[in-house]
Image (cartoon, rainbow, N blue to C red):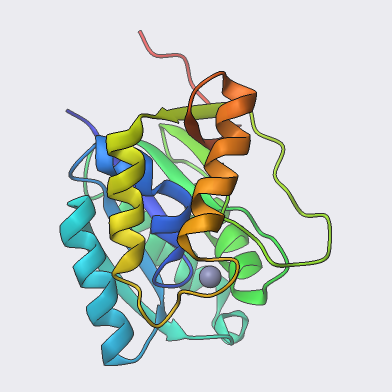
Length: 197
Ligand SMILES: [Zn+2]
């Protein structure tokens, strides 16, 4: 079965945004952009075991990714996207964080010729700006998938805070589920699509 590629600025964004989708589709591949402490990378690896994803670490400077040459990083993402027959790619919503904006922009450049769908994912946000993504697509989650996502997020002990705790995950998933007429859902925005035959 064709796999999915997920580009994550920091260790936890992939789980916050696509944890449910990954729980239901084992074998996704995550590109982790930022270089983190060993402890946080360990949490990322623990989360990868829960959600059964493989990964590539790009080791870009955390908080300062924008200082890296865009063509070089875009080329790396392009090469990774060509290493497997990915059916779709997920890119973080830009939001109000310089690493998220950089990851969003450089990913779209790297995936310019990507043959599959490209979608944005969202995450619970503590920003006072209005930055919520307008979804085009939903991934409905049953209790089991929702619990697996929560289980994966619990692995990020260093990252749990007001807007990244279990209540936030369930809250956002409930709002998106309400919009999608399901118990829980993850929301996505299709940026580039193709018709499957
Ligand atoms: Zn992040």
